[in-house]
Image 1 (cartoon, rainbow, N blue to C red):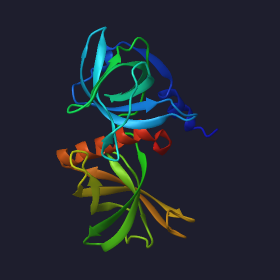
Image 2 (image 1 turned 135 degrees about the vertical axis):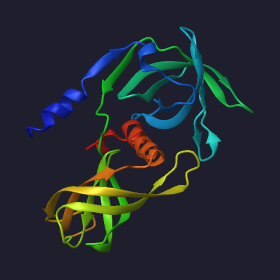
Image 3 (image 1 turned 180 degrees about the vertical axis):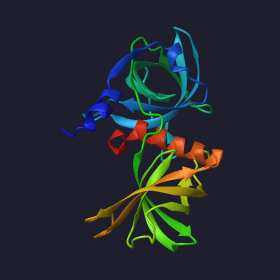
Image 4 (image 1 turned 90 degrees about the vertical axis):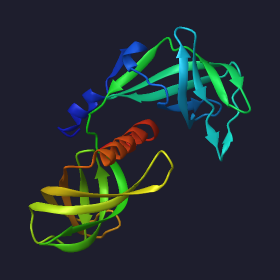
Length: 238
């Protein structure tokens, strides 16, 4: 085990949560897992509301633009990102409402488990980007991890300096309409490493950069990206 693995493992220790402590908001994105196969199948849903100690109301997830089939009495697992916690609980489908609203009542959670995560988690990505600086010119690059605070930037050629500020441009998908949103921000180089084989590169350089005065809208997009990864693919957390 690497020495720096221990703090990360402590962050993922499970805890017991009360429903109120999750601070759920109407409209929050949920991951809904069905258990019909050997491996659970994940879908995404939205919390519509709840009646305390009675039931939750959720949108029926869509698959290929059509609502999935849910059966009354079926067991599902719900995961939700709340603050810096990822919470999980088991529910039973109590009632299914079809056209035109497509929502369902789930049993109210009785046992909630969760883990507390870093507020500025880095997640693995593979995003084409461009960097620009008066002292470096314009270069194509690759973002291989991202957080709300900064990124790891891989380049084929070394930059003329190992410190200083540059402009970074890339795109993220908006969860609201699934359209690409251009992001352009200043970033300060904090460290550099020589790569002996990198992502889509046989060799190159990796720069750790910290965002400078990131636009609040772009901060929210990066935060949403982190949440999606936490809910869908924990293996991508760095």
